Length: 236
Ligand SMILES: Nc1ncnc2c1ncn2[C@@H]1O[C@H](COP(=O)(O)OP(=O)(O)OP(=O)(O)O)[C@@H](O)[C@H]1O
Ligand SMILES: [Mg+2]
Image (spheres, helix red, strand yellow):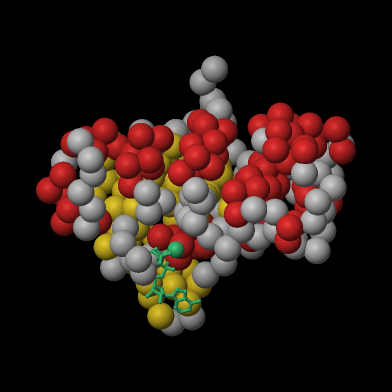
């Protein structure tokens, strides 16, 4: 089924923290239901880009349009209501609440029965529903963070390094679950090979600017480009 919601268009976006500009003149677009990998070495502005999309930085210029609606004048909660879901690099779960209580905070007024959507996507969370958030493994915490964001029914989901610190088998499980989603996705990831297998398009940031944008498959084949901008050489 082709999605009709969740077209994201970013144009000339310049933002940072107070007067300090970190990202400069960013432009990229993701079609409804598309998946974009946002890549770059440490400190290049990936997190700042996602934080800017959700309204958590100082924006100096540029436009963020979701299905033609300008978001840049809205605060974070209005952007969430407009359809932006965000799973930050820090995995924002409540450690003192149980898994289920964490999920309830993501319901945004939806009936409790909607929790079954989260449990269907991540059966492990159902098994652990009564456990405290702080007692979960890293992989379970990440599943919880993703599931909670999805319960708000975003049309665009922003994921900041979801695989960070997870064992390879857990990375596989998480990526398989993400592959089932039909929302528009922006995936920030240091595991470049996994990100490029998952996404259709890729953007590379260097010192806060877009230095490459194109099809994920083309980038995967361009080892020189990856070596230059990401410092990685993938296994062929
Ligand atoms: N709250 C902040 N205040 C000031 N500068 C910040 C803040 N957060 C990040 N920066 C700076 O912005 C730049 C980009 O950081 P950002 O976290 O966006 O990079 P990143 O690409 O996500 O890196 P990583 O791969 O390490 O997560 C860095 O120079 C960083 O020091
Ligand atoms: Mg980051």
